[in-house]
Image 1: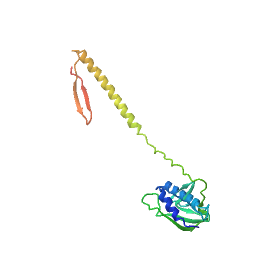
Image 2: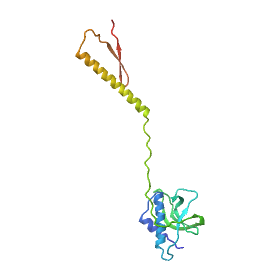
Image 3: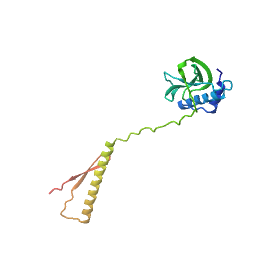
Image 4: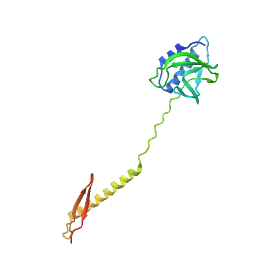
Amino acid sequence: MRNHADIVARVKADRFEHGLDGMLDFCLRVIAAVKKGNKETPGELIGLRTSIAGGESTTTYHGVLVRTNRLCYPDGQVVKILGDSGPTEASANTPQWNLGEVDPSAYVAVDGPIVLPPPVIDPPPVDPPPMTEYVSLLAAVDALRREVVTMKLAVQLLVERPDPRIAFPTYTTNKLPYFGVVTLTPPKP
């Protein structure tokens, strides 16, 4: 088993995106480069490492929970390829090739062409505004509109056809913060 720190550094220099999808893409590109670029042992088998506990550098690959900073050989030899790793830009994600523990159950084979689908981003659901307040405000505005129309018609009628027998009531207003309330006082006989 050869040290492929040079391949890891080259792949990271080519392109590295923060975030779990970017880190998984990085791991898959390192695997492809190791399989392709190793002339001493062509077709060297290396894959992803499973993750049982989850953690910051963990995501899923074809439904399997995997680490995005470690690779694994079929015999269980685990290799850490990123030091101080994490999905945020604050993480150093230093390229390295450090052999770690041996766990034969940790190997996840990566076969065929390595193509990650683009991430599916669903827009967050938007809660509609509460309709009860909206409906009651519309009803109040509609009632006021009808009153204004009725008052305009009454004033227009009085202006066009004055009648000396009609006694005009006196008007008083009570002022409120935003609206004036008009109270009609019937005329005295």
